[in-house]
Length: 270
Image 1 (cartoon, one colour):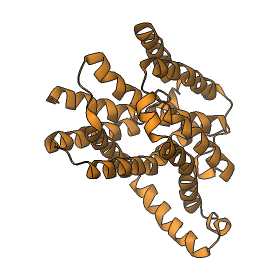
Image 2 (cartoon, one colour):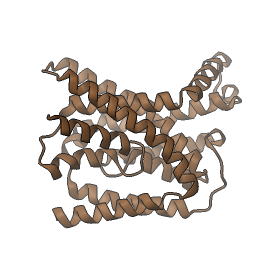
Image 3 (cartoon, helix red, strand yellow):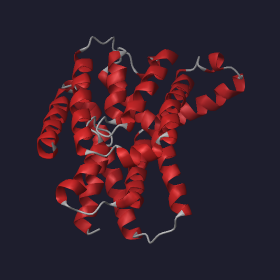
């Protein structure tokens, strides 16, 4: 890869990872639209590690409280007692909501990677799930935050996250949509979605790293380092400004973007 490709892909991944517009769709489409060679799995892993570092850094204080409370909840030996603490409860909900997507993703990994990267599928997904996000944003909300979720809410959001395995859906988009439909505030929905990204990204990156170790290849470590740095920086800024942005304006600009991009893809590739 040349340096322009490294910079563009890193920034695109960092910015789109947490916006409800599908980072996987953009990473698939950039090489298609620019005629660049596919960046390869190694560089994808580097960019996702950058995004993971960004969200962990941003939520570091929340994660410290959640981790300490979760460990204390284990000593009570029952989930019911452990979820009396809001921080422990949130940690449990994040872990439980991660199980469905990990199970399905592991079982159908090869099918998803090989057979579901069509620009037409991405176009349809962008439009369909964009319209659903728009409806959810207009839906009446009770204003609950991430600490007020129930076990039922967490499981439903976790099941919705499975749909993110379809390119063009957007992991953050579908989890925010589900949370909004369950009555959460925009900020609460976004924060829970971002916390959910941590175990999912960590597990997915770990799985890919195992595959890379088993199949040694030449690695451009300088490009990897730049990818981690730029994707992490752009992801951190995205999280910060996205949360502030949606409190005032909502999801509609992202809905419009998804529909326009989806229609454009259908027009180009039909």
